[in-house]
Image 1 (tube, one colour):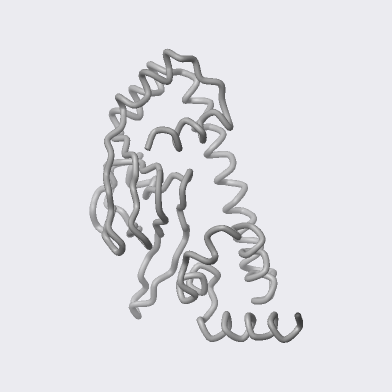
Image 2 (cartoon, rainbow, N blue to C red):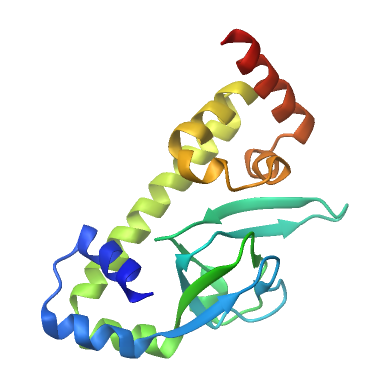
Length: 193
């Protein structure tokens, strides 16, 4: 499982052999079955999770019982209710596995200690947070300005490898569309090709 983490780290920072030996000591591993929760709304988020295998979704459920997906986390992605993790308050997000998955978990105390003992990790997480902010800004702009067809086309372009692994109704939830709208868009794409 650590190969995926090291590949991800080395895409963004340079790691010494000493750092590579130390980093695994800060993590624990967990296997999740399909539909198994990593975190439920109302719990305290005790860990950041790195997805080594599989896909998880992060979401809220509204008063009508509708699921609103904020993130799909596939191999090489991190997922958590970050505010809950940082300020130790109850999570507003739920996170569960879309398919059988394996994650590396780091607790808040281990996260803080990792940043002290392996200082280059501070740079790694800063890069992640910057990228996350840019992605959220772009998603908000897209949500407010693009048509349903444009949203779906953009999703397929950004995430071609996971669009075949995720059920259509979940993609619809992520895009703020109905499954029927996704079906119509797909039908139009087929007809136009």
